[in-house]
Length: 320
Image 1 (cartoon, rainbow, N blue to C red):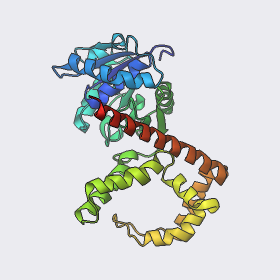
Image 2 (spheres, helix red, strand yellow):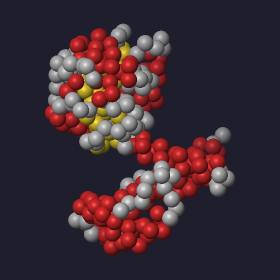
Image 3 (cartoon, rainbow, N blue to C red):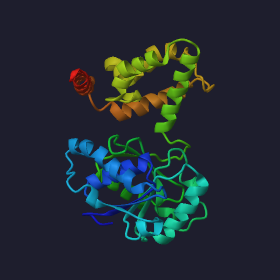
């Protein structure tokens, strides 16, 4: 793979593919986009124009953004000189199996073959494909030119060097790649999102709260918290200086009384202890004061940005 200006083929020009194309072009990469949609040129042009201000705010040079993107009539043309292929096609194992078999044949032998699949692990569509060692999941969150996470999920036949290259590639375009070492449908992000969505629907259906009120609760509590710390670090800090162990021992029992809608049995003491130790291994090397100080600075920054955005919206509404 070229270390200066690699060529990236974007297969599929839906919402995700167009956002990927804008991100890659914003980082100076040569981009080749293909999709059978008849309005491909218009869609790409509109997506680049819409993304340009966002990319500029990230400090990227958007001059000549469109010049770095070329349309390809079909897959063979798009991948001919590609160093990386980012597939963002239909969520269908049959479609992906046929496409990736073709990509293995027609893309250069060094090209990394990545799928934006939201739920299908790579192993579900790579059985029987030669050279599946360079195929793996690179699942973004919409829109990828703004949301930094990319779930990097190797299949059973993915080579370790392909994982390493995928991580390096996504870091080169300022994404945050997280490697997941076990394939599960939906990966991690969508499973967490799905669990929260199921509970949100249940609360609304039961008449506990309305949709607008539930969203307000999320935005002004968990949404704010989780924009700066995740569930485990949040719980670790919620336990005070005693950390996650204090949280699990003193607050955990009352939280477990809320019930588990999945029907999963309660954790055994041994399972709880293993989880406590895992959280302590992750965060125990830093002091409570250090971690809470960092959390508070980030949360204040988010609140300041939201307040400014609200003020800007009000200003626009009052303009003649």
